[in-house]
Length: 397
Image (cartoon, rainbow, N blue to C red; front, side, top):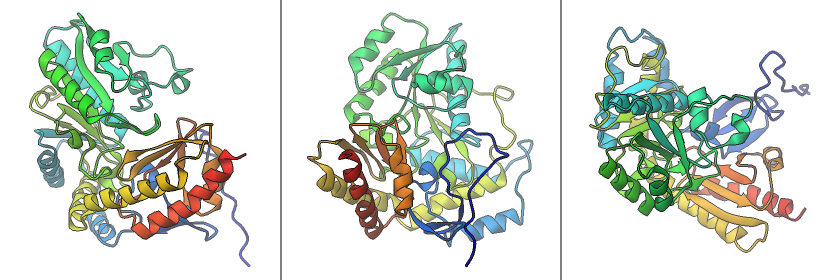
């Protein structure tokens, strides 16, 4: 009998409250180093769009690794232009800057907004951000984030942010009334780390109209909710609007690190040579991953799958949990769902893993489900069969 392998990382910084699990391989499901299998309800936190070891993605990446992994942005990268063209077609926007992560994409968006303000003669530009928002952990994106708990210990934060509540157009108007230094409004269509909190379509339309009226940039962080997760390419498209700036990352490369800032006409020419840059962003391997991810998503109709399986999963969770006094709400769209409980429920992450299901808990009391977009209806039913009894037992403790 093979000895049990303990999961430990004594030489890596203690920055994560890791489970005692080390994953080794995937083929739809994932397996740990001891051979235990798991249904993946987390998708690497909305990253593994095509699941694990996808038979169309892996050969393409292997071929690319055999050709060219990295070169530098002194030179043109043909797949960067292919991917940028595709993203502008899917979004209706104008051009793209490539980086490596969602944090970098959001940081670039903040720089775009500040440069936009300076180009208009505004010396100290201000950007509207939201309560419960999460945009990253650099000093600037942390300052834009609406979570004092993760900001603590990293003060002084960057100035230039005005914070408002979600879905309240009057609050937005009051917070910016008579302020000539406002240059942009920045938010997630569906907040991820903040607890899977959606912006209402009507509100999105109102903010778009206000930005047009005031000559502000509308900047929509689609890092977690974008790339087909809600059943459209980008979650804001359900409201029939277009942003001026749209950061992307996570699912764009199906696991290969990639970030992007997609800009509309109003923001497309703000950056000029020397204003912004990156060493790794736009490298041939990441660009091939993005091109192939979108191609496979289209071939396998994964937007339709996300909408259909997501609706089925949400309905099944609502049917099982509605009326339970320990459950506040099941919310979200497509394959980005949150189950808010009436008390902190972090222990469910380990209990679910013990039962063979990978999930996360965010905002202390929200079970978050962001599985690969290839999730089948049968797997959704399996997920419900594992998760619902765990939630029911927990709320009754």
